[in-house]
Amino acid sequence: MTTRFTEDHEYIRVDGATGTVGITNYAQDQLGDIVFVELPSVGQKLKKGDEAAVVESVKAASEIYSPASGTVIEVNSALASEPGLINSSADADGWIYKLRLDNAAELDSLMDDAAYKKHTA
Amino acid sequence: MQPTLGCPVSETAGESLKTVVLNDEHIRLGGRMVPFSGYSLPVQYPTGIIAEHKWTREHAGLFDVSHMGPSLLMLNDKSGDPERDHAAIAALVEPLVTADIAGLKPAQMRYTLLLNDEGGTRDDLMIERPADPKWAGTLYIIVNAGTKQADWALIEAATAGRATLQRADDGGLLALQGPEAVAVAEALIPGVAGLGFMTCRSFDWSGTQLIISRSGYTGEDGLEILVEAEKAVQLWNALLSDPRVKPIGLGARDSLRLEAGLPLYGHDLDDTVSPIEAGLNFAVSKRRREARDFPGAARILSEISGNLTRIRVGLFVEGAPARENTTIFDMRGSGVGRITSGGFSPSLNRAIALGFVTPGHEAPGTQLQVEVRGRLQPATVAALPFVSHRYVRKATA
View 1: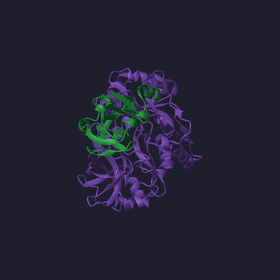
View 2: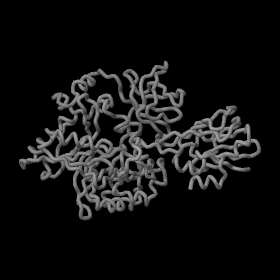
View 3: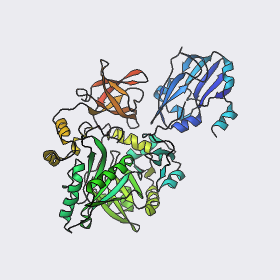
View 4: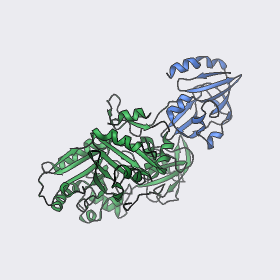
């Protein structure tokens, strides 16, 4: 499994043809307490860069852009009742949706762990 | 994702920010500093807005509101008779505002509105009559940060030659709010528990004089304390050393006042909104209504008699928070208003909002809809405040 990052602080964890998307720990810390998450629909087709979800903190709404193209195969329904999972566990229990990837080569343009660390330093 | 902290007031890029006297303390405490009304101020500390909000409702929250505009307006030619001098300063200020300033007893304060000639709101503010007779002829006036320059210029022009305005915004203004706030302060400043709600007095503390009022912007019991710059850090740290006190940022200040149903100037109030549209009828005094001697009196008295075009309401919003400028619709899909501030209520664990609707849609329980990101969500008119005020009306000591 490899994890890639966007400049806008989404991550995508790739396992074969499936990608799990969320926001990074850095991003959740910047946003503060998450109080609402608008999830995509299962079956929804997304192009890389499409608005896929919305994460709301106490103060503001932030759009989540899909790091890759594909079809949504699962959403994290636990976030409906417990949006704070993104704060407590951004990279594990706080994942947002899973995507069946159209084209794994798209991920090559995203940052790896070292590059993302540099991006947020 | 674009991380944004969503500052309640938009800022002009490139303008240099002023710092408050407690700036180093906020940074030391891990405060996340953001631009607000021209100042760099903490939106939250590391525990976050929800924890800070709940702490204030349960214990005591300490807020730095030094960006606001405390000031003293002093009569130039005093007669030496306290009642005559108070009447004289009141007569200079009353033409600008809606409150009965002449009727203030020593130590009393009132929430009032500074109006334009059309009855729109230039600002909402507090006016206090000092307790000590030797200060008769002076009013302590606290205005909002974003409007202070314009307010002071207006007051100075209206009172020129007869009174002198002295800014007092170069020091610290602290708010200590919550059910344990007064007990905390009493341990440090004996006598403060003797203040009744909406009264103020000066207290000697550690070789300086504090002006303390029993008032606030959270719906809780609490105090607002003016302290000179040299002593502000010492007072802040003395209050924080009590385990019942935690520092609270602007984020929770906003969510607390929203739950308390209190309007925020520049959002729920502006120079087009009248006090009656905003549901602030209590701030237009009986004597002033009878005298019809405040700006925009014709419009405001007509609105009091029922001729309104919009009314401020509270809304419970189902689902995602509905933010400022969200359109409000009736159940048939006709636009009936606009949200002026909205967010998430940590106490109620749901989205709430304030907004204006056309008459006929203001009764609590009325079913409405709000459009968030192109989709309609149910909303219900709620009685204000969303969370009951817990002011302590009588002195506790």
